[in-house]
Image 1: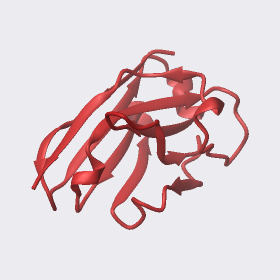
Image 2: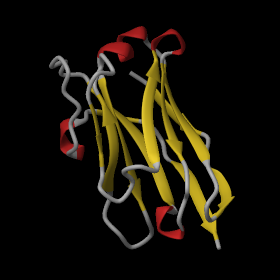
Image 3: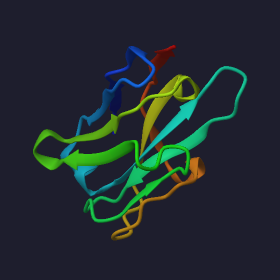
Length: 126
């Protein structure tokens, strides 16, 4: 499964961006998908995840209430809507798919994901 993440860019603090993660196969619609980010000098951290059904979602505490993960099966795409962006949200954001289909689960650990897309840079200016 090839994943492609895009939608990053430069935004002012308080602004919004929507990231997209698309895949090359419709089987992607069955997979849980996670978004992770990594800032310079820091470890990769979990941001949000969504189950294949879309029923289950998880968020890191740092983004709850500001970020929303969703998916559109027709477009084979998972979105990460990011609102009220802060400087500390700046990082390279990557999406990943978990091909072990367990209904209504959305892993939060990066080692549970086996396919990764390239990252997209999010820069937040003050």
